[in-house]
Image (tube, rainbow, N blue to C red; front, side, top):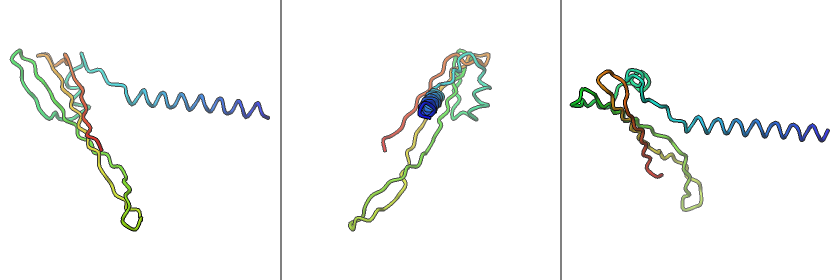
Amino acid sequence: MRWRLNTLVAVGSAALAAFVTGSCASMTAKENWTGRPIAAAIAKLGTPSNVIPADDGGTTYVWLLHRSVPAQTVSFDAQGNPVYGTRYRDSVRTLTFAVDASGTIVTWNDSSARPPM
């Protein structure tokens, strides 16, 4: 009976570790856009925030993606009673794509900015 419990704990721990590792990897993986058509980026991201033509026939596309995430806050009044509220953390992700005259993404940059809470 004891070896079954140990086996169950070992299998459960391995499954949990695999799940956490896979989840973290998928959250941090960046998509590589180099060499892909700009139409694929537009299909995924929607209309760009800015389109800047270049002298060499290429174009720079810029997306400003805004996100607001709520977080619960708790403070206490003078009598020690909890006062609940919501604070929002805003983030802006800027994606910039340099595209050649044929419509292929040559270089791209992904930058994110999150102000502190």
